[in-house]
Amino acid sequence: MTSHWPFDELAIRSRDLALRPVRDQDVPSLLAVFPDDFDLDPGFPPLPGLPPATDRERRLVQSIWRHRGCWSVDDWALDFGVWRDGAPIGIQTLEGTRFRTDRTVDTASWIAKAFRGSGFGRQARASVLTFAFECLDAQRAVTSAVTTNQASLGVSRRLGYRDAGMRPHDTGAGIVELQHLVLTRDEWRHSDARIPSEINGFDTCRPFFGPT
Picture 1 (spheres, rainbow, N blue to C red):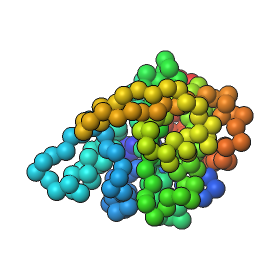
Picture 2 (picture 1 turned 90 degrees about the horizontal axis):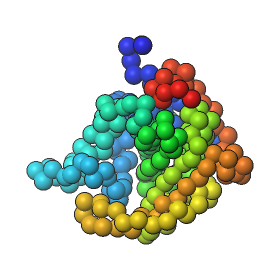
Picture 3 (picture 1 turned 180 degrees about the vertical axis):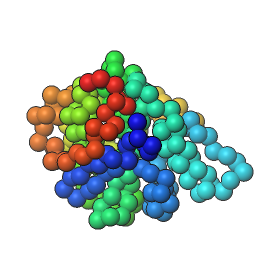
Picture 4 (picture 1 turned 30 degrees about the horizontal axis):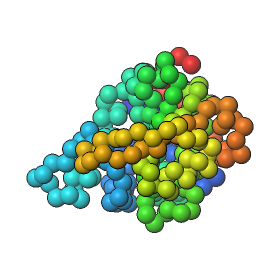
């Protein structure tokens, strides 16, 4: 094994965007565009002694560190920084839980407010879906959003996801209704929503996903 985190070699490039796993040196520039309306992981409750804005940044950074530190071939989460013209515009996360058994990935993302409405969120998701289905041999992708988040649900449906029922979810601040959606590998391969993506550096991190 090399002396550095092997995901530093991984990169996905599409029409307008470059995606690569977040490095510590990327964090300040990502925090500078981090929106105040992104729902953070309830697994990191607020620290009442910190100013709210500082605490939101702390929770985002800790979630990135936890994803690296708790990695296994069965349960993993990979945070891709999303870059346009060399500047960061968001994060696209790809996650596998019981991955070797279920071959299922989940996604989460945020895009800086100044770059919303231009299709970049959909393009970033399409890039990691191609990575999941073509490189990781995933068989299905799932996602979810609160029923009031029509922007997120719209992105999923335009990419070909199908509704898969609603369930209550405890956010830590209350119960909300989540709309769940699913997309299979075959559906993706026959979808006209795919965006050509160039994937480099996968060989160095292939063992971290187990046998395919």
